[in-house]
Length: 470
Image (tube, rainbow, N blue to C red):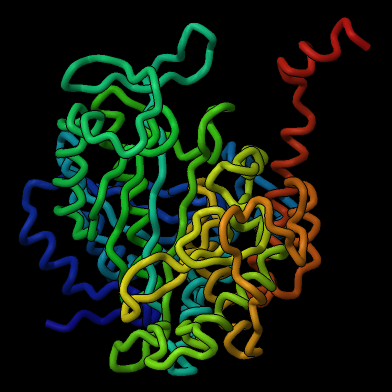
């Protein structure tokens, strides 16, 4: 029987999806309903099983101020979404394909991601997912379909701090030992994580996430998980949002803390959230594939070069999206596997935009600036908007870097710090185009509030440097 849903926007999940899920999962007693805010933090509620049908039929009222919170959960009045707006409700709707079980919970719970809409059914402009949807639609209108995948780098720490008060690597479940040295690509570390790894892969399979390779990364206790690419950029961003929740939930139940700080340890590698992207035609053919005939010895497709050019030209204005917190900026340093300038190259991890090695038919770009602490919807929106600008303007990226990209001169400098990135974003026409003017303004207001909160705190470092010195 067809259910009448007069308020449902076109992007809402069909009620048939819910009916099939409930029939297949009689054991699930409650559901996490999750809206992703500008910081990438999941906010929402846990509802009982019988409440979910009404959410699929009529949506769920949530205050717009849920998207006006800083990282501590405090209201930011400057967003215009708190008292200036009367703390007014909007309507949240389930996102297709995100209703999944959470196998690590007991009693069993499920999860569904939400998107926020105005009461008239139009997209709520401060929901980050709508920013990515808008950029995806603009490219598709030009017969260019974005294909994307995100990588997840993270640290596994013990729940207890070390003797120095700092995070320490989690003990490996099989042996109980604590790693004492970074062993990049060492397989034994992964083997000794087996109960955790097995639980992650089982949960990913239950949630339909195309999880692939697990890597022991450069930092002590640092790992990377990769996802297979999706033919829909929105779905790729949903994947990484779901995977971050999954890894954190499984880690907690194994006595570990999964950290998505960009730079949790001073002397270890930071954690990125690289996005791999290409464009396809309406038949799914890769438009970034190498040209059949080289031009001056180069087979790089002109469309790919222009896309890279657009990303480099807009990187300066996009850095607040890629590095949204103070800690984000500790990740950028020479020889750190994080970029320090808008550069590009082939098979080179010292640049900001990399063309990975591989077959010419599967050629794509990898944007390496974003930290794992960034919001994937906003990162995706900025990257697609940069690609779109490069393609539309036929922007030439200039010569590619060979060898050490950290030593290569850059034509344009990136903002030097968090405050500089905030002010650059505040005046950026590109970011207003990429995120939407309202989303840009609210994002800047949130980051300014976060900056003020941080700068007002007197830290242990203040005491160490200045208490008896100056």
